[in-house]
Length: 223
Image 1: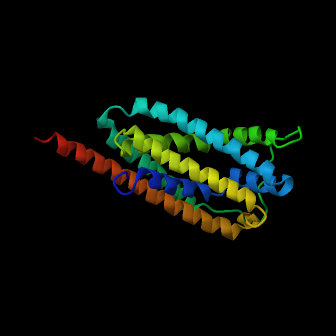
Image 2: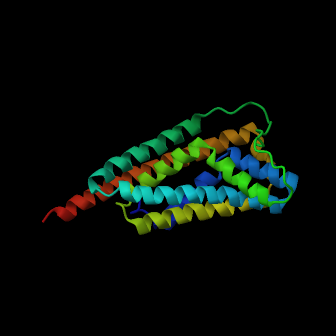
Image 3: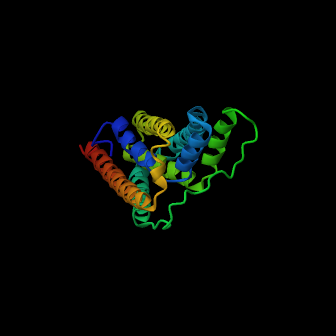
């Protein structure tokens, strides 16, 4: 994957894919912003971002220890790419409820007034999503393998991803009243298809990058 574009831009592609995914975080941002205002929505977005950042940083150092043997780069890259592609296929064909009702995401009640408690709500809401853990650790291992364990490239990749996610979350907050249409089942269906297709493409890039990295390593070893 690292041979196609600059790692930062490749990370931006993943960030955009995550940003347009329709899930609990999106509806939390929209509902909070509409009900409590832009400032409160931004605090919620900040909490979501910090939880993403904490997971990515933790997995970054963990993956640096795991992906040390170049013999495992190819295996981890192919497995990670396949997992991303399978998730893409699942998302592409996932059915959506035939109602325009927006999911209720206010399970975490905020009792204290002011925007600060919404920061912690966003943090906890995001961390409580088990898919998020699987997604970030799979992505980290796969991208590490695709870049041959080059920590600078991996860091740039996820810097691009997280920056885009934060910026688009803030944009969702600001435009909350205009993008309520995200709850429409037809919109959900097409967004699922777009996100699924993008994840399949990213998975293919990861597998391709891992293969190229592997064969490049072999060619360098040949006298």
